[in-house]
Amino acid sequence: MGEYRFDRERWAQLTFNEQMGNIGAEVGRAIIARRNGNKSRETRAIDRAIDLFSATVEVTIGTKYAYRLKEVLRARDEFLRLFFDGTFDTDADKIERYFMYFAFAARAARESTVLQANHGCHKQLLHP
Image 1 (cartoon, rainbow, N blue to C red):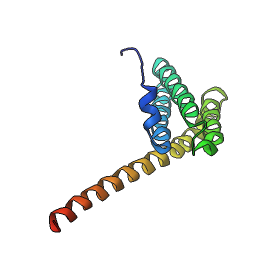
Image 2: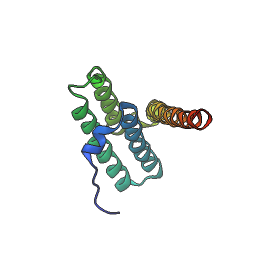
Image 3: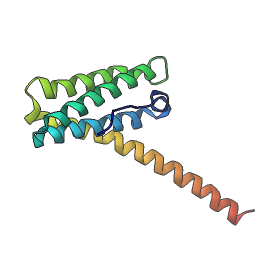
């Protein structure tokens, strides 16, 4: 696997739900790696998740979503507790489910935007 890099400027352009959904993908990768006993993949996924949490905090400060900072920081704490405080077996599914809702919301918003755009195209075709 190549060196991990990600574009913080592009990250800042994502919606809050997209950011949290992407963090959730790394959380899921870390959980799967732990369940499969793959310590190196687990460590890399944890590192990426922490990086994404940090980037989300950085780009959220001073925006209209600043009120969500407490939620992001709490989610980060729960994620870290999962791996470093012996609660993995009881809480892994819960935290994975928590992040899945953000992915669903981001996807629904994206699909809604596409549907609205397509509807506008159809209107133009029907009513020149």
